[in-house]
Length: 103
Image 1 (cartoon, rainbow, N blue to C red):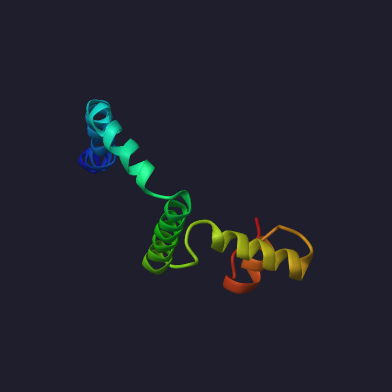
Image 2 (cartoon, rainbow, N blue to C red; image 1 turned 90 degrees about the horizontal axis):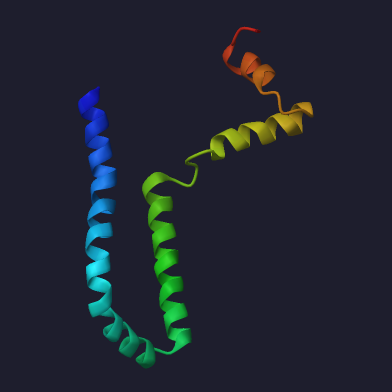
């Protein structure tokens, strides 16, 4: 149990920690390069590239984890309950579908 927590914490926090240490040292050297690059690239090209980047990122995560990930299933169940019963209480839907006991 403890090793899983340490492994998960290391995977999550170590990259953030390393970036926080390295980034302040790199920014002063990168500033002149970024300023020259900003003068060369037109704003509409940058916006277009960022749009393509975010679109591709969204498509990747949609295909990798599926469109129905996260809380969406819960919201769909609530929407069906609201449509069919007129309330957000999903216990009666579960009782009918899977035979759950009444509380």
